Length: 327
Image 1 (cartoon, rainbow, N blue to C red):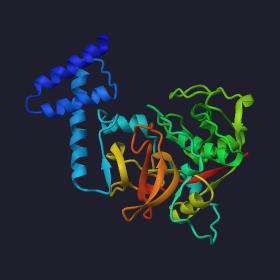
Image 2 (image 1 turned 135 degrees about the vertical axis):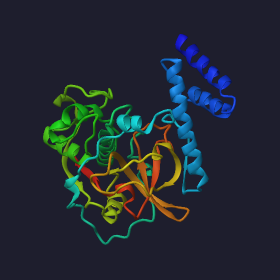
Image 3 (image 1 turned 120 degrees about the vertical axis):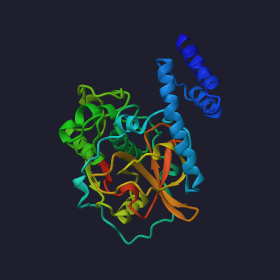
Image 4 (image 1 turned 180 degrees about the vertical axis):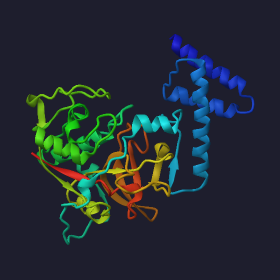
């Protein structure tokens, strides 16, 4: 109760003190209430308010440009870009495994749209928290979909096992990794446990793998040739959801809806810094898009999902793509 009082008193002080910027202060007060923000002191509150104002200005400026997507205030609005990169993104990875892919194209005509959620195999959106473990959620998302497709039932798999145990395969826990390398770890390790057996903590820990709790095994993994969106689209259309990675640049964290694109992000294997799950594709207002599941919670974006422009390898979305074959 004391913390709550301090937080609200501090907001009140900001509102009263900001004669010129009262509108921003009130917007910040609503933000604090909506997202249950708690600050350690009035000084931190002021610092967060300054960051919030900068982010709010960025969001409003972007939305005035009438882009094919909309930004909005969300739970990241009191974080600086540097904080966000530290706590939500992994280090850029060189995904050399995809320089020569092994997905086989066919002459089959692709459906105009695809949404694997409608097939009931896409698991619920999860939240990685303040750990750069996006690669583990991309991995489990692909495996959960493959398991549901193969066995007709759902399962929630352990991201924490990958955080703690997959380091031998060039992964770095809360500091990043790659789904393709996680699939290799699971293949040679003998399987992946359930979320219930090995729950998520959002911190690097000591490996506590138990073969008794294995829920899924990986027979092999299939890599999409670097940058080959035709292969990626074929795989999403005819196989199942695919793990992908791309470069997050400032602004994307405030995505709300529409088809996202950027002229500042890179597309090489050295650029990508966030792994997600492509679950479909389509066209919106004449713009082709990828439908992608994120790991920042259901309150982010469009119920935890976003759309990324298709056809330009936007932000490297087809640069580090792979999917598992399960047993």
